[in-house]
Image (cartoon, rainbow, N blue to C red):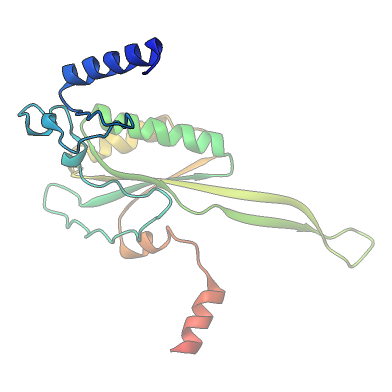
Length: 205
């Protein structure tokens, strides 16, 4: 004979499971409750509503960086340029960044398509100083040269003089601006050179 508390617990469990419709129990001499493998709600037509993860494409792992694909250079026409690089450079990174943002916002405001906006590798120059009395040179200062590029396409030949004039009027002091057509050499300059690896690959070949 089971205690009153155990009997009440079993009755409550059987009533809950009978209401859910997904569990079946069998009462044996040892009072063992066995779980059935039938799950009726699987056959309901509403099962799976609201799930959308399987519809999305698989996400790429941000830690695994793939190789940057080479983009085909758009040719120029009689009334439009192809890919044009607006190259901003200088020693003050704050001025270079702010002027690059100004160029990007200006192009977006006047419906000039911006293909890419990226930074070239920073170049470092050491300034050596030779004292008056002595032959040993020492490092006086280190200059860092920063470069940002805003690449646009579809720039019309009639609007390009206006764009250049506006940019020159708002160009900050100490910042250089260069407007040129995009070439394959400009694409290769985005990557840092690795002479040790290049020499090793040349020796293998």
